[in-house]
Image 1: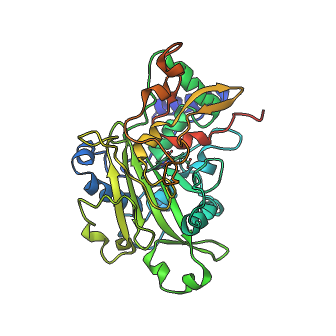
Image 2: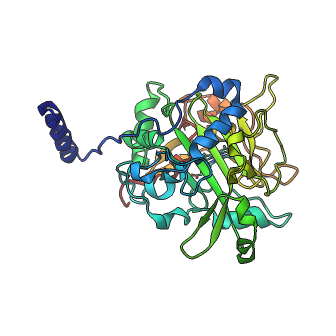
Image 3: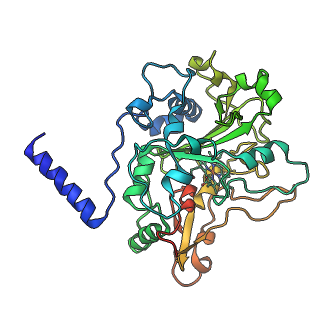
Length: 379
Ligand code: HEC
């Protein structure tokens, strides 16, 4: 190591200890294919399948988190790439709002399946007809598994978005200059939904049709749905896959690409593309619908992109976030009404844009998991 580098290293150590600032997160190179906006826009379904494969390849944890194992094929045993990413609930947004630290922290095995949606699974599978739909992914509940890749995590850490105070600073320093929050193009996040197998199911053939995870207490879970989003295009690329034995979608979109042949003969051949979304509306202005029958149960007539546009903060009063709602009561079918089509500017503007400041909601780049942030120190 040259003297220069030693000097640089000791300086940065000095700076980080003296100011208490976090070390910069260093992300592994080439963990995923390079962003490809062209393909995402021109051939979204094909692009979705490629993403599904990239994040579902077996991981090589000996090389660090998020790295695919070059010796293994898709479908081989072992944790897959996305499962080695940072878990939003416990590893990014800490209860004390503290800096989550480096990318390559050791994965705490015990928190893996604690996160899956036990209550949500039960609800998703067994909701009696006529019961009120319920938002399954209330960030205050521990009901789903949201994970982010290193570039997403790095943006959160570098901008101190991991606590409410940091988000407030980002907003106040950006609003005046009209600066938008913009995650890097390499950002990817997933949200997984697992179903629990009963003992008799677990002993039968059903689990063979699922990608499974066995909890230390012997409980067996099968991956039912995987939402994937990437920042390859400005309003993110949205896609969702589901295991085919689950409930069929109410608004099927079809698959314009078809399952890639490398998945045939692996467990992943039991998964289907529910669809992909690259815009709020189609060419004649109709709202684009994309949802999953389990994760978005009770509000399937919904749009990933439009709902997520409501991720943002209005202001922070006494350290508490004031957020945009994303459900507006029940429609005639008893389903939750959620944002559809183009975002409605007036909802984002103070006093409907009639008076006062013209900007009251500060959008947080479609990233709803930022709501999980807590206050920096106990209040
Ligand atoms: C009605 C609103 C709504 C709709 C529709 C919706 N989501 Fe979300 N989504 C949320 C909320 C709220 C969260 C935050 C929950 C959390 O922190 O885990 C979230 C979390 C996520 C996450 C975790 C990452 C993050 O920070 O936002 C992903 C990935 C995701 N959704 C993808 C999708 C996809 C893909 C679709 C469409 C198939 C979709 N969502 C439809 C509201 C919605």
